[in-house]
Structure formats: C-alpha cells, structure tokens
Image (cartoon, rainbow, N blue to C red):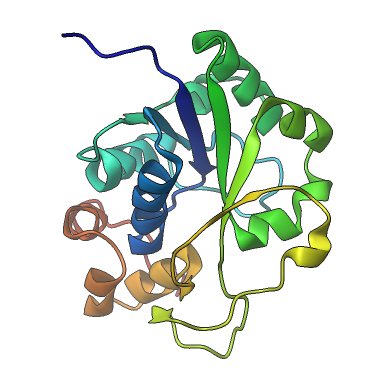
Length: 210
C-alpha cells in the first residue's frame, strides 16, 4: 500500500556553517512533535542578514547531508543556494507551497530567530504562508557552550503566534564550533556529528585567522 498524500511539511533553514548537534536535535524534535511528512533542510544562499562571508555553499550542503541525511523524511534542499541574489524565507515558502499544494507548512525556528522575526523581509508574508514552530534557545552568554537546561528567553511578549517545540534549551552555536575548530580543539567532536567533524578536518574549514 502506498503512502498517503503529504500533509505536513516543515522548512528548517539556516547558514549551517557548520550544522551542529543542537540543529540535529531540533530537526528530530520537529519531525516527531509536528508529525511532519517532510522536513526540508535548506542551507542559506546569499544571506542578506549576515555580515560575515559564509563558507562555500558546496561545503555547507555536504555537511548538511552528513548531519541530517539519515533522518527519515528529511530533504536536503539546495534551492536557496541555486537562487540568484539574496535569499528570503517568504520566497522559499511560496515555492514549497506550490510544491505541496494543500499541505500545512511549518517554519522551524530557534527562539533567537523569533525575537528578531519582525526585522525579516516580508515577515507578514511568512506568517500567511506557514505556522512558526519555535524551540527555546538560551541567550545567556555566561552559560558554557553545550550546556543543557539553561534558561531560554521569555517569548510570550513577542506578540507573534507560534507552536512551541518542547526540547531542553541547549546553548550551542556555530560560532562556538568555528572558534574551537580554529584553535584546533578536539572538543568540536562533542559539538557536531562525527561525520561533520571529520569533514571539517579533511577540508581544513575554519582555520585560525592568525
């Protein structure tokens, strides 16, 4: 018997420079708690909101394949990398809606992204096309990287409807991974999937600036 129609689709976008264990946990949580039939993991192409230059798209795409590729229902989607000019979430959601007519769309976010959501280009269009699904992400810079159970921000005052994803806040950032990699620290093995750690080493990503 074939599968039924695809009814629930998620979009999980980001620089993924590199994808780390908190990203992986969030993807798993979204798949399970939202009952998604598909989750499109979409590395950013030209990131309009980031000042620094991202690693080559080919590397970020390859690391996403290594980090997320084995999760059932996940599609590693290069549409924003192929798109010319800045990448806007509203455009990507419109393409996914055309790909999955009638499906419920969810945009998977961390709490930090929700807090800055009103600064997004055409954020009202995003809300019309998808329901936000948000996981806590602690903003306390004094907490140690990789620490679990630290307090996340209060999202109640944001004034934007969203569906909470229940997972312990985990302070782990790609910035921290890059910093540890630049120092040659073996601790990145505790921050990213093993295959991603090996890829970073093999391709000498994130070298020291000195």
